[in-house]
Image (cartoon, rainbow, N blue to C red; front, side):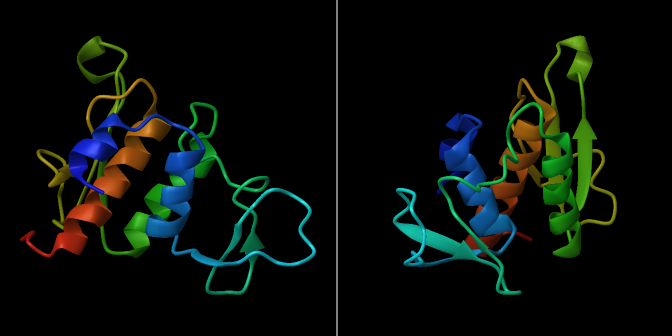
Length: 140
């Protein structure tokens, strides 16, 4: 997924699924036989916990889920990123977040979200951009 595609994404299940897989490290697994929902696959983390992408998907990107989006920040920190968050940027009611490997990413983080209506959305976009750009391997 490109930075431009991430910029255009809206908050919701599609973004939350990407966060769970790309940032939080959950993997797709075959759908367990005992599930009665419409899921075509399950998700599993390294500890063996499972999650249904239809009925149990955490809401990382929605406006009401600052606690869940903060888990994204903590996971990115565990991966070696530093973060910068700016709420109500220049008084316009918009927010942005940035992640970087530098010790102080404050002035101009390498991986920055566009201005977003909510802080959880800015955090999720910045995290996905950082993971995608680092995966390309051409970052300093």
